[in-house]
Image 1 (cartoon, rainbow, N blue to C red):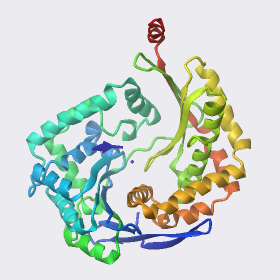
Image 2: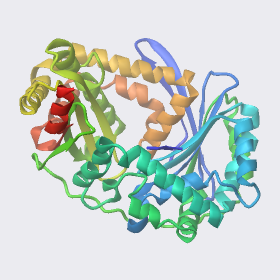
Image 3: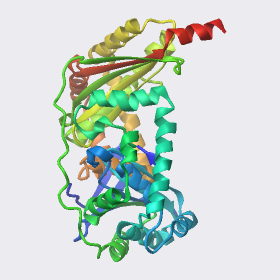
Length: 453
């Protein structure tokens, strides 16, 4: 399985972009037991994308068992009181395609692609897994070894990933579980046992802590709601009040520089990190402004920094930007670059800072803004032709709290102006938000050894 990441209203919006009209329909209902149902009809025929989202991830885990949310994701495929693991997975393989799951810091998602006619079968399976997970002791022990091996292969065996996901996160976050990778540390994994899993399952795998999202070939939303209610409507609430999660105090100015060397690294890798409060994207409009800024600055091969440092001056092998938005706490904006080995890191780093400053004072033109905004809006209008992309976009925005505006996302984005986005770019790319620099590079002895060969 992959490891990764409010009150709803029914909405249907007509979306206008560049003279082309497309409809994103979003029908939302909430059952008496707290289960939220989100239905997203599309024009595709014979294809339906299904997901059940549990609003729990590693940020909710107890401190001594961080990673137990991810572990429970694994155990959801190990059978129920009614279905053995073999029978369960046989059904999933027979009636679904692209079946998988992932856990992030804030959510756990189980998803699959299906033919609409088998929706009742999937609903029955998921309702059973919500109530009757078996959690066999021998399966727990066996899967704990599997997760430990996953941790070793994906993290500990690589100096770079181990460094990024452990050392860097612990520097970015001082108090919350966000400071630890979703899978947990080896000491946490060793603490997983059936009792802790059962406690976690009974508390968080409940209808009042879940969202069912269905997109694709849907002609009658009410009939889908009726079908969901048939299987989930009688399951009782049991989540209750969630624990309060700690939030780190805000940081300003460069506070951390970490220089990391390893013989396993062959290139110089630089990460420049901007951190700012979740309040900076308190609306969907501001989130889309942030996405426009990131894409224009370093989002792809057509971005300002890529054209300058990769295509033009050829000082970098690559450069790209990424927004990492936590449900609580903060937003992290990474500028990640791979530097030509013969160049001095400090010189290149300074030049990137200068280029970012020039971006917000000169290079982020109205023409560039309009081009990037049009690309983003165009990609949104295509969502109704892609049930999978639509489903995951909906999950992302609903979990972040933009459920009331998601149906209008293209219209909102298209209405954003250059002037407000320029001012927003200046605020989030201010040097006071540049809080961390991570530099990973080969050890000198390792480089000399390679050169001698």
